[in-house]
Amino acid sequence: MILDFGSQYTQLIARRVRELNVYCEIYPFDSFPAPDGTVKGVILSGSPWSVRDAKAPFPDLKGIKGRVPLLGVCYGAQYLTHAYGGEVLPSKTREYGRAKLVKIDTADPLFTGVTPGTQVWMSHGDTIIRTPDGYNITGSTEDVSLAAFHITGEQTWGIQFHPEVYHTTEGTKMLGNFVRGICGCHAEWTPESFVEMTVRSLKEQIGNDRVVLGLSGGVDSSVAALLLDRAIGDRLTSIFVDNGLLRKNEYSAVLDAYRRMGLNVLGVDASAEFVEGLRGVDDPEKKRKIIGRKFIEVFDREAHRVQNVKWLAQGTIYPDVIESVSVNGPSATIKSHHNVGGLPEKMHLKVVEPLRLLFKDEVRRVGQALGMPGEILGRHPFPGPGLAIRIVGDVTPAKLETLRDADEIFISGLKKNGFYDKVWQAAVILLPVQSVGVMGDERTYENAVVLRAVSSTDGMTADWSHLPHEFLAEISNQIINRVKGVNRVVYDISSKPPSTIEWE
Image (cartoon, rainbow, N blue to C red; front, side, top):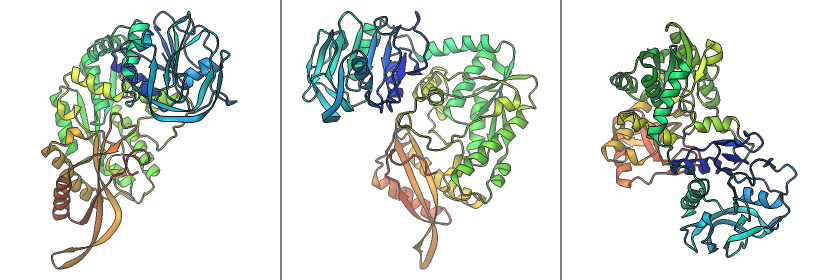
């Protein structure tokens, strides 16, 4: 169990534990179930707060501390000190970034096999000055003497650094020492075990009822459909809506792939309705809301054609669940998300969410275990509002055609040159900008497009992909020569943060 104090890294702790094939769940620090026999250990996350702040998160650890193995990370370690009689003060030397654990108690089970001098990642403005009685120092950096401690007579540890981030080079080993060694968890959380458990659970939950599911063409909804198909077969009806905002020929190609997978899928061409609903709208949030509302209308209409439906299936994944109950940390809502919010109430249906326990990368591994074809499993993430938010400004049929043609050249080029699977997400953005150009002997005044390709693991952070200049030059030439109305191509070299992956 991971208690969240609002850290930007809390989800990363959970992902690292899951990568060790150990199951974990995240709870807000002030709302978590009392540990029972199923809870083998607890991790306290970091936080943007200082333990000395009046409104700092203070959990009630009765029933946890001293009863089950406990690991405090950064703020968690400072809380274990401050709340039990120690002293935490602002650091004289703020420690952010890389540091070396110059002293390690290698006999301590948390540091079994960890190399003295190993690199760790610090991110704190406070430091532990004095520990309560019985706290033994087990690790120090050059600037922080109290970088790690263990409480005598308890299975309780605290560390000032973040073992979950990539820059702590032996962080996974330390977390493995805690969850497997100290907590005694077995490495049994695998994609195959998830499939077996979920199919069995879905059969019990749904019984002989019928289910409808909105397919998007993306990995999440597709994996949810395969799990449900394995559990209830043709009693699942999947609805794939063409909103007119998909890539070139994507609707027919994806629909055909679903049918080859044996899914009971209903294809609905509602493209004219969506495009008409967006006429004259240039505000990104309004575009998203219009698309979401129109999807609900279309899905509701088509789902009512299926008889005796009792359940609505959704491709909700674990980050969505966490965000809905998250602590008020440093993150803020960047944009509204396209989903099927409101549908269950409108249709008077119960909700089933087969993937609500999984992170994005775990969904892909489950899809692989289910035998999902690579053409769906390996697809880049694609935004729910589709090309509407890759056209900066209002959406028209002519702009959609221009963008589709340019996008097809870029995506096809990535695949042909072996770059597609090395990129997390790629897009072409059509700008509301025209620039002067020369084609032949004529002066032109036509559109500019942006190529965007990023590398990431979960989309939370991303870096721009370092594609070869020769490749970018080739794509630029092809777009300018083949796509009518475009005379300028640029490449986006912004990372996330501070930029987002999409432009709207």
